Length: 85
Image (cartoon, rainbow, N blue to C red):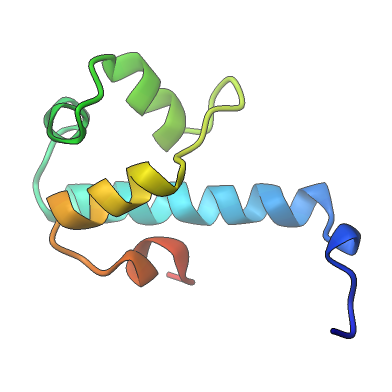
């Protein structure tokens, strides 16, 4: 491996989180689903927590389990959430 993973900058990680959050939001809107409806489908009891993840507030972000469940709930491939828009 040519590059060290430790060389990945915080900015690059932040850009990744922004891309994931944006892709989730776009897919949710395309599915005509509210944040509340999707949060409840995922088993997230707090709409505030879900909203914070989708909007990257208070350093909250979706984890792998969330991404898996979101892909199932919205009937999309996980690559559409993680990949470039």
